[in-house]
Length: 386
Picture: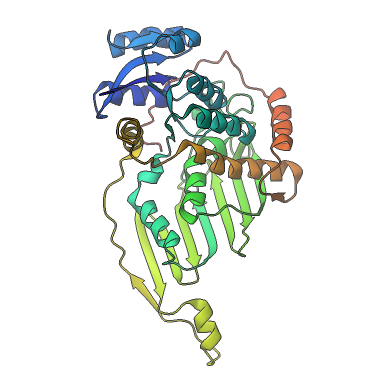
């Protein structure tokens, strides 16, 4: 295979952006050959925009039976991610899936099993993993440079969304349409990075989700969560779409120092001796370990969505290791599901979460959903999003 024939499924905001850079030849070894979208109106517009070399489909079965694609990039509303990926694997196609991996972990577990059976390349569009800052922080943690993790604090509130954003599509911000709010829509990257950088999942979590606190929506738009780990470490995660100006500040404290990522900058304070060693040997009462602010070299540049797509294509053609293996998508989603479930139960939630109990509550919410399917969807500019 010299080129991977890629088909984009879902050509709305994000899918349309993917289709355009593929069409422009910005991914080496990939050619856009087909697009599937359920909207006949959008399909007609795509025919004019993408040209005669790209086949446009509105029928799912015809798309998969066409033989025109070797791999698919799924960019549909969240509930369709897992079923479409499973269908693609059943047709022996490679899969690159937009975040999140799905809406509930039981669904995603079935997707992972289908991927394993197929033996095909499976990747998630976790483009924040290409950010050199987060790559460096992950390296500091996993190599032991930061010592044992003690505390993680992530304040991520620069997701401001107006009411007009939520009104741009009838499926937006509904249990039936999206399966959640800020956690499932805006925060999948941060939830993925949280577990990816630390290499840890919590043992239990207590969360407080506020539904429609700032906007006329039925899902969460304000969240505070507290997690505990087996080694005694704790984490606090705070997010909302209703604050302006917002903040994106990640602070991770370990036994050998502290790292802060904010304003596209990484600051590292390193202890000359570890805190446990200092505490064990110091006899002077008041005092603290000597601390140095260290300049950490950050190399490379963030390649974002195109970087993940290129890596996916390279994995198919050359066997290049994946930056964001699809099987890992379930981890960040479990953090999101745990926050919902803790709020619904008004109690702590243990990991791994009770997937059947979560699905039961989600289905109850979806059955009462007020989303308007006949509302006209508006195509938004996603250039400034994650």
